[in-house]
Length: 118
Image 1 (cartoon, rainbow, N blue to C red):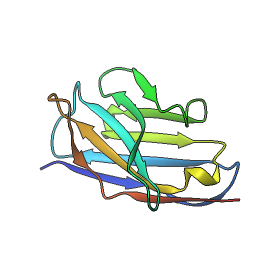
Image 2 (image 1 turned 90 degrees about the vertical axis):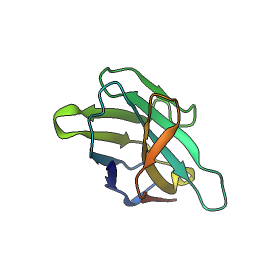
Image 3 (image 1 turned 135 degrees about the vertical axis):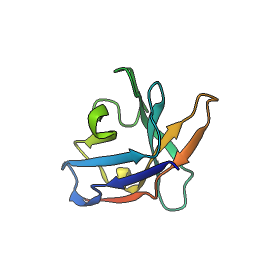
Image 4 (image 1 turned 135 degrees about the horizontal axis):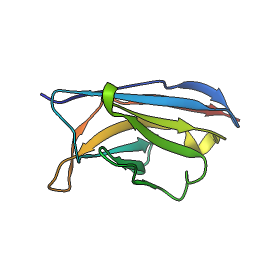
């Protein structure tokens, strides 16, 4: 059974930084894409970043490009999201997810709250 557990969220002032972690368990994720998404109050969930598990290929939403960095530690089965220069509009619940070979993000974590104060 796949489990994804996010951590690292919290309250930070604008311009500050946070690092989110997503620990995966339950199966091997070789060649699987891992993604980060976020959902702000009253808004649709939106894509933030993704990384291929067995490679360093990454992709970011325009809104976070240059400020956020996604990375992974295969030995720990963990994906990270380093968030710098945070803005109030980055406030949201952040979720990690696994994209299965069929192309769908099939497995999701429970989310971690990030709040950026102005």
